Image (cartoon, rainbow, N blue to C red; front, side, top):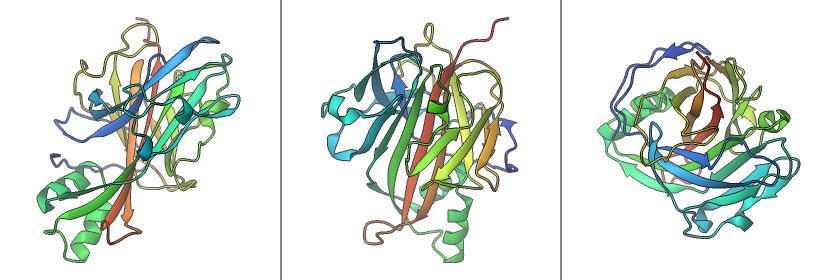
Length: 281
């Protein structure tokens, strides 16, 4: 499922990443626009895939633990969603301050063969799980896992506090400044609201279709991450983004399952999407 690659990254160090033909399944929120005028309706869809090429996942009401828009107030978007609809939800901009849209799912159980599971752990930088499996002699055993998704998307606006305030997801990428603004991207990775150190954070990039609107996820290329780094002891990582366009940032955290009958491990997949205007020549 996922080819093994060697990773030797220091905390908070950013490197250029060569394209990787991985089949890792990223999961991200894609708005109809990354900036909305007052009164404009933003349609929200979910994609699963790699490198910005993915397929739409219809809204599944039984899986939605949380789906909110944090703007001037926090709005529960599940009331705008229809089970089975390709549009996950709709948000209407009440002002020009922007909004952070956040979703969290419940668990799905999977089981992977030992080689496949080990490749997956290596690709996602889950070294602590690999070491634990090796220590307990389980390297050649299948991986029983249950996973949950925690994607966010930033609809840019004038109130940057809406972007930098945590929304309360189990695993969450929280920008320290407006991610749509120029300059390095400083992020904190929080697990149950506390800084998570040593986690691999990766970022993908694609051009925007027009203005601040993304291209169709079904037609985009499956590219490798552009930059990546590991969080330091304070859960912080700095990513130097070399250009504008649409950005997808992702991190994964895995821990022993709280329900050993269901799985051996449980993982949380956090992502953050946003857009930056293309830099002028």
